[in-house]
Image 1 (cartoon, rainbow, N blue to C red):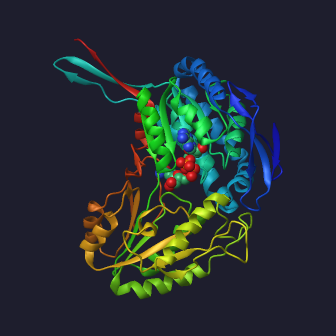
Image 2 (image 1 turned 30 degrees about the horizontal axis):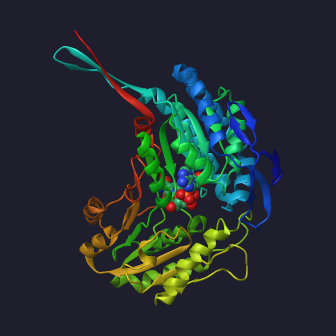
Image 3 (image 1 turned 60 degrees about the vertical axis):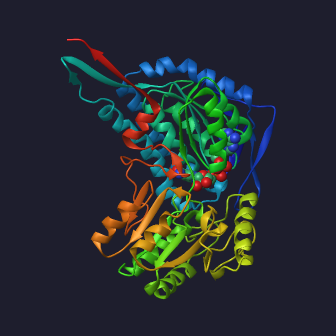
Length: 481
Ligand code: NAD
């Protein structure tokens, strides 16, 4: 089955064992830009998942035995293929998930290629540790590929987050079954074409399209799966973890957040306000987003004035327009969920400093960047992940209160700290519960660093050597003298 999306031909069937395979059932894929149906997608379930896992199992011994340098070369060729088709990928992704075309062109798609190149470069350097001696016996550690990896990705950065899993899994010598989000299924299909052109053997990468509770649930329950890596929401993670428990399948969970964005009185307030406004990027649909602005009382008014000044200059509109800063929400259901949070917060007495509802001028799925204050710190809007362009601002007095407020959360994905005092930065960051902490900056990412969350934000870390630790069976072999 084929669809032409933004002028690009995309196959909307599954990719199993190096071949396209359809399903009797299909589902509609609508663009968040205008609500139009842009494709009909194969709706996989148990049989398609079983076929994909079997194909991946069949391909595993060959790929695992392929010389690491050869594996690395194929990954580099996939990276080059992504770069060659960068514009196609960017326009299709924007049509599919409504995120900014300019971000796809300049940030997201280059990063998707980089994911492959990084793990290709990294694999030959990393998979190995010096041997060590125990009373004359030689300990030798090896990172052996684990087998078939089930990879489940969300819709907010579809190709980037899929390749963040696919690249290290393949680099380590595993085979893969990827289940993209049903709200953004298209670029995973283009990735299959690119991988095939790069010479990835049949069955090493498989994609099953479908609904989470159908194809996704069948995939994580499959006994042939040796690893599950999931990025998405906490409720889905709980369901996957319950299923994984039955087979004791190791899993890595990258989940949501409600990250604190702390601004001390001694901070560069312009810098802090500029980064605070960036928390609206991707219409707030970013797991790392610092959605709790904690601002020292003495600079609250000054910070708010600078923030509002910058936020009011953001341009909301068609994500294909290079001048647009904020596009639409992904889906009517998600839009309604975001609006539900906002309307309940207003009803409960929160003060709206910015936005507070849908953008009626634009209609459709455009939600106004919103800032609340005067919120009960334990209310829904202050504690739950909205995953939309909605921030809450809470003043604090002094370091102790800032740290307590920051850590007063069920999540622990990221934190941002703005201060002009280096000692304070050291003291505060040491006490924050978060997988990533940024000081006087935001979103600086190095793939060598571990990535993941504490508390409800996830289990495990991926990135750099941590990805290989997860995607491999680490073996110690002890040789007698
Ligand atoms: P989601 O949990 O609804 O869906 C994620 C994926 O899981 C989709 O592919 C979906 O089809 C699949 N799925 C749904 N139910 C399933 C089931 N029962 N079994 C197996 N698979 C199932 O999440 P979403 O709405 O797509 O993504 C948004 C969430 O993802 C937010 O909470 C966000 O914070 C989080 N996120 C986290 C990170 C991170 O790296 N920590 C990155 C991006 C997004």
